[in-house]
Length: 105
Figure 1 (cartoon, helix red, strand yellow):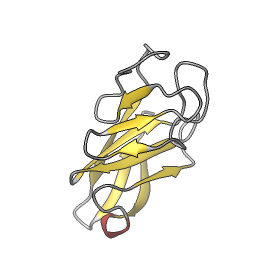
Figure 2 (cartoon, one colour):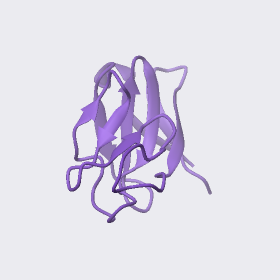
Figure 3 (cartoon, helix red, strand yellow):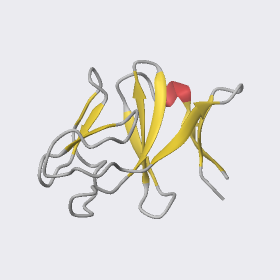
């Protein structure tokens, strides 16, 4: 299922937004011109991950509760206390310039 996020012009490099989709919400990130999408749930304690800071230069989001870092490109947990990766979703820019996320099913 394809979910429209926004026009790419509203998600320039270095920006992010959270959309109400999937089981927990989805964070969508523009990391140096590429778009990525991850679940909005820290695997350490199920807190809202995408409300945390993110570092566009390293493509990392930082959980606001305990500081665990995740790579938005792969979902990989980079620092403790998290060690389990978050789910990722295919994100892309359609020919009409709209950012979309593809959800399974």
